[in-house]
Image (tube, rainbow, N blue to C red; front, side):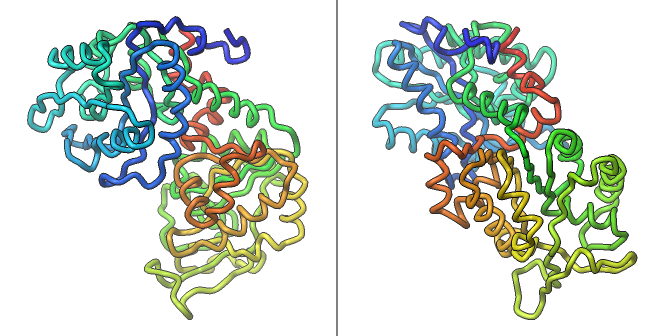
Length: 428
């Protein structure tokens, strides 16, 4: 047992001859296409280890949001199928995977795991197939349910296996396949989960100076983690729509697209930030655009923050200018940092990219700092805009790319990784 993490680890489990149910976060399919297999590749070490130790693997993940939150209806179609993941694993690992089929009940999705799977498990035990990959967990009515329905589904999943392994750091919501199931099977953290939690420690106990960069499209999903980062960071940098809302709240300007609820939260943040104002590093130049259809000639311009006047009305502000990262104070802070956490795309994708490119390039200039990148859009944009840097970052010990940006922010908000319910469940 690794006392540092204080949770049961995969390497402590006896796997020989056991059926091992592994929850991963392979949520990388959009409209039937995998745009980046990073999150799949990150779990292969866990799968290889289980196989080498004599375990037989059943995999499961969620894909997208097939459940309509308002109506409760579950849509089962190719857009949220695990089949592209299965095909990717088969071609990469040269193994045979099988996806069992179940009966869908109208718009309720799958009501549970059916006994027809027993034949597939027999095939797995006999070595006729190498891995079972269950259908999208969110196609099952019990996955996102509460109470008895969630318990029933978790119990059915547990009935398939001898051991449960959670290697899905990015899936931090306490659902049946990440949380409830730990009550019914001996449960362990996979190697990716362990790696992610160990790297979270570099945010909770950073080498200083510690600079955090956070952007996003809604203040309500970020405000608690922003408050936490403001207390723990030496400098906090904002980008995206949350920076626009902050500028409106602080300087009394109006920016097109900033909604009343975001502005109200931004005002609360400005009040909260007052005692820490020296820690908020404002990027000094923003780009206003008359159109969100593209970066159109003659329809965008740069503004200096220091020139903003109360009551001034701006069209859409869609990026931070690259000039911001030429500012001597900004350069000095980033170049002297020892730890940099980035959960940020600075501009409106795919048209407004100069802020994100300038930010990532400047961070890379600091060869001494540990650079921790949140998952999701941050990772996708790094790969799209600076593919060479992305490839270097994957193998550079000074970089770490998390598989789940939302999970990182949730852990920061809670103050430790035991604030993530599926991690806490492993402890119990």
